[in-house]
Image (cartoon, rainbow, N blue to C red; front, side, top):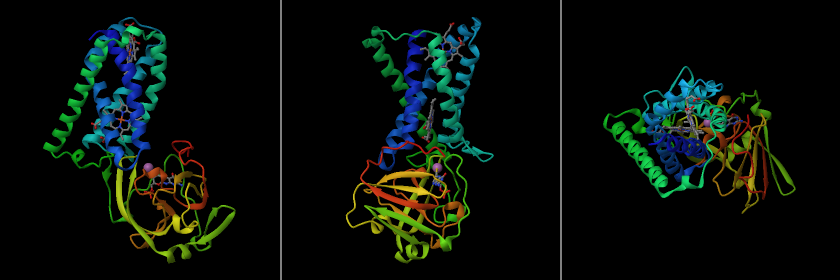
Amino acid sequence: MAGRATNLALLVLLPAAAASGAATFLVGGGTVGLVVIAHGVLGLTLLVLVPWKSIIVRRGLRRRRADQLMSVILATGVVAALATGLAHSTGLLIGAAGVSALQVHVAAALLALVPLLVHVRHRRARVRRTDLSRRNLLRMGLLLGAGSASYGALEVIAAGLSLPGARRRASGSYERSSGKPDGMPTTSWLLDEIPSIDSASWRVSVRSGGVRREWSVAEIRAVGERTSAILDCTGGWWSRQEWSGVRLSTLLPPGATGSVEVTSATGYRRRLPLTDDLLLAVDVSGTPLSPEHGAPARLVVPGRRGYHWVKWVTRVEHDHRRWWVQVPFPLQ
Ligand code: HEM
Ligand code: HEM
Ligand SMILES: Nc1nc2c(c(=O)[nH]1)N[C@H]1C(S)=C(S)[C@@H](COP(=O)(O)O)O[C@H]1N2
Ligand SMILES: [Mo]
C-alpha cells in the first residue's frame, strides 16, 4: 500500500478508534457489546497497518525534521494504547501496582490525539476529492476486513487457550467478588475522595415540583426495596450485588416522568432518566454500605456504567430536562 494511502487510513482510523473507545463508556445495556467489538476491530485494523507505516517512519526519521519528537510521542502513545488494549482484552495483564491496563490505555490514547494534530498539520496531508475513489474505499474495506479477521482470530485463540480474556463480559470487564461486597474494588472516577459522614444525622433531600422532603437512612431502610444489579466500572471490572433501599420512583410523585439530578456530598453529580430503574441503596448483601462504597446512601443504576452510580448521595432533584444534556463524563 502506498505511503499516502497508509497515512490517510491512519488519519481516519485513529480518531475513529478513540471515538469508539469513548462510546464503549457512554452506552450501557445490550448495545455496549457491539460497540466494544467495533472498537476492537478498529484498533486491530490500526495494528494491521504497522508494516506499511514502518516504511514511512524509517524514511521520515532519516530526514531529521524539527518536530520529530512529536512524531515519536505520537508513536509511543499509539503503541502503548495498542499494547494495553490487547493486554486487557486477552487478560494477560489486567493491571499492576494498583493501575489497570485500561486506565493506561485510555490515558495513552487521549495523549496521542494532540501530537496527531501537530503531526498531520506539519505534513500537509490535504485530503483530496480523489481520495474518496472507489479504489481507496475498497482498500479501506479490505483493511477493516483484515482487522475483523484479526479480532475473530484473537477471540478464538483466547477461547482455545482458556485465556482470562475469554471470561470477560460484553463490555470487556472482568468479574470481581460478586455477592461479597467486602472484596469489591473501591473506585473513584477521577479524584473524588471519601467524605466523613455521620449516618445517624444524614438526610437525603428529594425535590419534585415545588415540594422538598428529607429522608433519613432509617426511613429509607424501612422501605426495603431491593434489586440484584451489576456494577460495571469503566476501569475494567464488574461485580453483581444485592442492593436494597428505596426506588426513586417511590420517593417521587406517582407516575413522575422526566429526569433526576443526583448529587453527592462531594459535589459529584449525574442526571439520569426516570425510565431507568433507579434505586437509592443503603444496604448491600443485607449489611449497611461501607463508607468507601457510598455510605450512607448510593445510587444503583442497572444497565449503566459505574460512573453513574453516585456515592454519598445527599440530594435528588426531579424536573423535565433531557437527561443527556450534561457533561458526558464527570469532571471530578
Ligand atoms: C488511540 C486510540 C485507541 C486505540 C488504538 C485502541 C485500541 C484498542 C485495542 C487494540 C483493544 C483490544 C481489542 C480486543 O482485542 O478486543 C482495545 C480495547 C479496549 N479499548 Fe481501546 N483503543 C483506543 C482508545 C480507547 C479509548 C479512548 C477508550 C475509552 C475511553 C478505549 C477503551 C477500550 C476498552 C474498554 C477496551 C476493552 C475491550 C475488550 O476487552 O474487548 N480505547 N483498544
Ligand atoms: C497512528 C498514527 C501515526 C503515527 C504513530 C505516526 C508516526 C510517524 C513517525 C514516527 C514518523 C517518522 C518521523 C517523522 O517524520 O516525523 C512519521 C512520518 C510521517 N507521517 Fe506519520 N504517524 C501517524 C499518522 C500519520 C498521519 C495521519 C499522517 C498524515 C495524514 C502522517 C503523515 C506522515 C508523513 C507524510 C510522514 C513522512 C515524513 C517524511 O518522509 O519526511 N502520519 N509518522
Ligand atoms: N461521588 C462519587 N460517586 C462515584 C464515584 C466518584 O468518584 N464519586 N465513582 C463512580 C465510579 S467510576 C464507580 S465504578 C463506582 C464505584 O463504586 P465502588 O467504589 O462502590 O466500587 O462509583 C461511582 N460513584
Ligand atoms: Mo468506574
